[in-house]
Image (cartoon, rainbow, N blue to C red):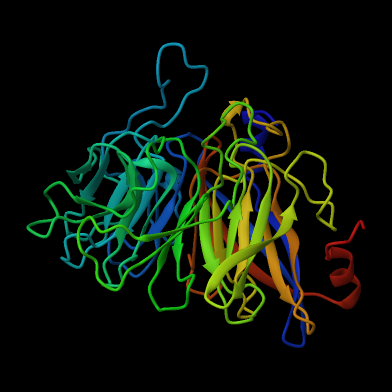
Length: 448
């Protein structure tokens, strides 16, 4: 579909259907897609109330799209730092990237009650945070943009799945990243968050961590109440005390095969990694995509023998182009971002992911497939078995390197936002009651 066709299609409400039984009703879940911009500004988008009007807003690249309508055509796009167009990494590069903005993380960094924005760009480039001016704003953007004050965080963010979460349990999020030869995290400078942030190394088991290494996350693996650090090569146990420079106990396990991708050998891996009790046995398992530029999605069941912790892999989507594992016939590549969220409100977290649109333009395996978005609904059986049932949400947009969910309209249903080379989009969930016949027609069908 070319740009004109895509723009025309988006004039109309785009409803993407998934289904699930809710209570005693037969319900179809419809995701209404809204294009905020057709321009590629970022590989991600995020949600936060930046003007304190009670409505969630969306940030993607240098732009804030004000809620509740997020409509740039009516002037509700506010630029908070000077826009920089996508460019090549070097003169011989065949691809264009939003070098200054792959990820946006809304947070009140300086504690003044206003939501600021932390940004990270192409791996191995600096991170900055932008200070909210702390003044109400709304309606149409002014003719001259009001740019927020920019603060330096670090000169390089390594790994292609950095995140901004509370790892240490102090209630303050840290920037999860690698730096130099260590995995670790960056925390705001205790003197003042406007000063360069402090990197806390937690590992020395790696001699070299390439900045394009994929896959990272946090979660409590051993059940001690502290969040551990996950990578494609294993996990690191958080110690009881957080002395600076202290090595976290390393437990190697091959969640991903670093050498599967023939083009990007040795730093192959997925996107976001999660520790979550998939099968309800009281032990946190690991969920991850396997190759952000190739194939594969799995969950790893935690298995204990005494105090020894290991994992058993359960494949959700196959590790090669041919589908040999998914009973519903779903198979797509380039799962560069994964979000874990309870889409259907049944108390179990589902997997939200999709194909990263033109991650390396058309250089990745399967890159010519439709740019789909799916959620995989977690279902548990009485015998302890589980299944992730795929529900297609979209087949024209795809995802970027960041995928963020949240309630955009206050109805209690999870929505999500996307930023990628197609533009920036909001997907708002709607419920519609249907009869038995329509419900049955809409359900995913097993092919084997």
